[in-house]
Length: 123
Image (cartoon, rainbow, N blue to C red; front, side, top):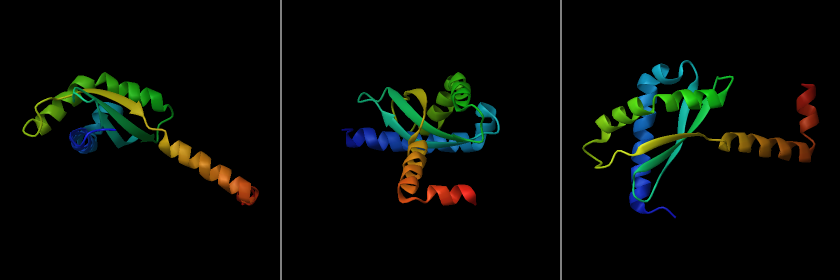
């Protein structure tokens, strides 16, 4: 269970990285649509795991790799934006968030179990 301090710090980082991607995302990953789905911070606040959802890209892992290659620049911009609120600027690690894929799989299974899947395919 994350402490209140970790949760607040994670929310701050999630918000700021989202704004950085909104302003300058094209420089980091091109035309893909990237959403920051969440952030998780280590107990010592030195490492932040950022979970991203990616749309409009053929290879999602390639987009994650491209973003990771700009890690130092993103961390610098994060530091510039939260330097008055945080003492430690964490190391950033980017991961693909698969929660939306899981939701789609579950919904598909539920439709199939109710017999709705066959009707959708004929339409």
